[in-house]
Image 1 (tube, rainbow, N blue to C red):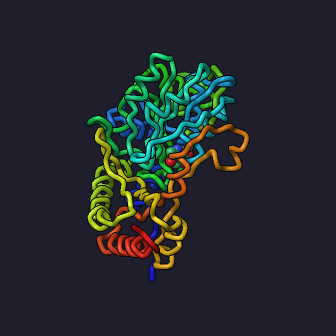
Image 2 (cartoon, protein in one colour; image 1 turned 120 degrees about the vertical axis):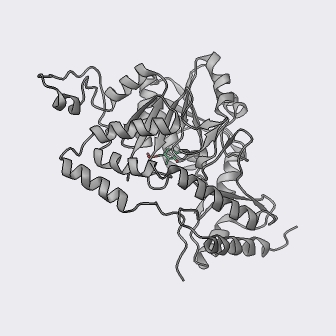
Image 3 (cartoon, helix red, strand yellow; image 1 turned 30 degrees about the vertical axis):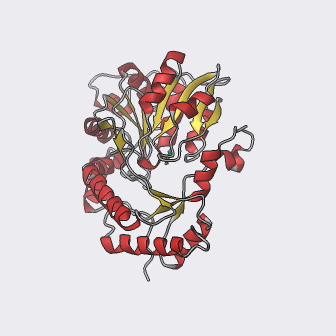
Length: 382
Ligand SMILES: *Cc1c(COP(=O)(O)O)cnc(C)c1O
């Protein structure tokens, strides 16, 4: 029996050809392809400026650094997120302060953020978890009068929409990921999006050792250019090899999102009436790209999440636990955490089902069947 994987990136001969072209050009580090990829992502999302990076993690680090967040500052984050969200404030010497989430979207809300704000809060990292858009305007309205910056961790959310526009098109600093577990991949990679031209210039410099002029511009110049290092920077540059893959991947975004949404619809048709299962759905203010199909087990359902995952695996179906809770990890043992009842329930009671481009109706049927049987076979239910 072949195992149905949790996901599979959609890569083909087109990406290989694009990489071959970059190799043949002799310019493989950050150069014209990165610039073209930045422009293409901005055009696709309606974002004014894009700054490519090595990952979403390094993009988050630079975002906080560029905002001047440092020692003594607090940054509100959801514990319910990949650990990079919590780590970013720690890289700049700030303290992550955990806020709870609400169960439908598994995201922060203005209410949960408000409880975590204090006199030292300098920024909030709002995650669009698993592609599900968070109500970021409500959080920004709360933060703006207090001088608290909002950074959107949209690692999973390229192709999702918020209030009629693509996630990433607003006025906040936004970070994207191009890790293979997300929709579009460049192997590893990330991008910062901003509407602030001066901030974009600074971010370009920061990712390139604080250099005033990029290596590519120096090579292209007809006159001698001696570079200056204007501030402490990093090497967070994407390569042209990666950007060439990204350009091809970006051309597939609309098809990817459409197919994921159609597959999610099939899951809903098959599982919507199974008592004890709570399925993801679009919030009233936006649409998700279903980066992950995140299913929650009702609290009353007398079956452990891990037992469900094992039963699925026994039937040849991969699944993953729901979103991790950073405050429960040993790496965060030194961080104090408030009560996070929703986070702890969601991390314990959620699981991710297979969803990938090229998945067929029969595979969705097999997964849904196995899950329904498992849940309906739970003892003493209802
Ligand atoms: C994957 C992910 C990241 C990290 O992305 P990388 O590109 O792998 O660094 C950060 N935040 C969230 C919410 C993620 O899902």
